[in-house]
Image (cartoon, rainbow, N blue to C red; front, side, top):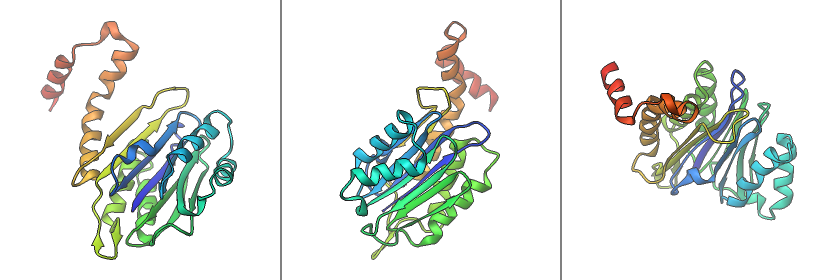
Amino acid sequence: MTFSIAGFCGRTGQVGVAVATFSLACGARAHAAGGRGAIMSQGYASPHLGALGIHLLREEGLSAPQAMDRLRAADPDFAWRQISLVNGAGRAIGHTGPRTRPWSGQAEGRHCVACGNVLLGEGVVRSMIAAFEAAAGEPLAERLLRALEGARAAGGQHGPEGPIPERSAGLKVAAPGELHLSRDLRVDLSDSAIVALRGVAETFEDYAPFYEMRWRRPAETPSQRDWQHRLDAGR
């Protein structure tokens, strides 16, 4: 009972992944590496596969299909897994094992792939792709977040007893040439995790230039209190 999207921005070269699920702390299983790729392991999720996948993309420089083949070879329970993966060139590929719980499946778009299980239907993953592609002029983090919102609007997680809430969500973005993540935002437990993640993301964007300045130009950086005063004055 999870949906995710892995995507690439052709304008900036950024890669990223966003995910929402009923399970807790799903952001811990999302991985992204600047210039190399992003991956999410879900379904009967294997933390090992996500870590291995990002290693194959980052350290060994494998293509997306090559990395997926290596993951398949490394996991005797691959039929139970679901994988969203994109490499640093924008090649996106998904895997939905036949043992994942229905409805499960995936959809690919331009520089993106969406996967989900225990969903209302195929329209959920297709809505993720549509939302991501419709926001082509926006920053990658915003496009990924809109994809999650599109999935929720299309019915999201849905089991035999009806709708299932998203209790955790995560968003990770990495830029080429950077060792750190430019966006690493998580909601580990909430009654409405996607709404909560939107709130975290919007507040973080107000502070992102401050964090960048504090890192790159510490001598010029105002106090965080002064930065907040500037934000308040600009509203």
